Amino acid sequence: MYGFIGAVCAAIPAQPLLGAGGTQTPKMLTRKIKLWDINAHITCRLCNGYLIDATTVTECLHTFCRSCLVKYLEENNTCPTCRIVIHQSHPLQYIGHDRTMQDIVYKLVPGLQEAEMKKQREFYHKLGMEVPGDIKGETCSAKQHLDSHRNGETKTDENSNKETSEEKQEEDNDYHRSDEQVSICLECNSSKLRGLKRKWIRCSAQATVLHLKKFIAKKLNLSSFNELDILCNEEILGKDHTLKFVVVTRWRFKKAPLLLHYRPKMDLL
Ligand SMILES: [Zn+2]
Ligand SMILES: [Zn+2]
Image 1 (cartoon, rainbow, N blue to C red):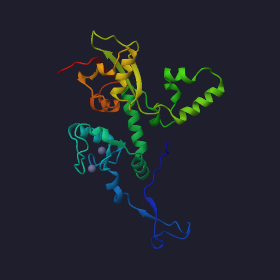
Image 2 (image 1 turned 90 degrees about the vertical axis):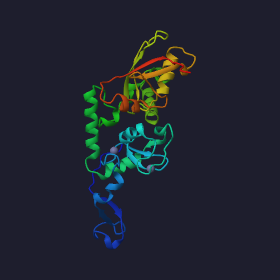
Image 3 (image 1 turned 180 degrees about the vertical axis):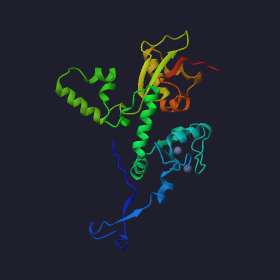
Image 4 (image 1 turned 135 degrees about the vertical axis):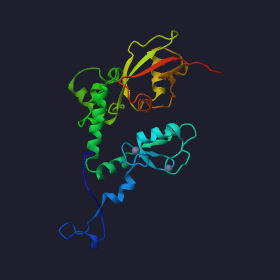
């Protein structure tokens, strides 16, 4: 991950006459810009704070904090800035994390990233959840999250060469293990299906309800994941919701793990 860089001013190449002096490289003179002048470009219109978890509407490229935008789109399907219809029914599928913008905001605003990481760590501690690797302030120990599939696939013996190549492979593709993680309890609330042997699971916050359906269907040997409904607080969850979205919108102030129920799909027609 990128390091924390606090800088009060952005340094950009400028015309020699505006430059600050002759001791630096002659051609790359710099001009200082007040943070105030660029604030409008790095703040969220919904909360008026600096962008956190910058998320951009793919249609119009307007950017907001992720949590602000997700909350807004619970009730609306238009962009808060330009009012364009993002999508009639699934606006959340047409927004995306804007890494570049977030990097810029963190580089420009002194202390912001540090403060945000601290806030997130405290949030996880308060909920008794494990702090995800990317906000621990240290490198993520992806090895702790090895799943059985991967174990069976690559870890046939314990010799050190194998370990090294496996580590290298993990760096290339960590199967979302360095993502933010969610702890979930999957309970069955129907007499027609059996419970899971292991109902406590932990997975990437980017996984969707559909992933969970497929997981349960596989564990219970169901012919199709379509036979299932997954519920949170007795409300059926849309298959495209990410678990992050479910936690933020339905489990925000509750203790981990996120409690979800599954049951056979009820045909209302
Ligand atoms: Zn915001
Ligand atoms: Zn817009």
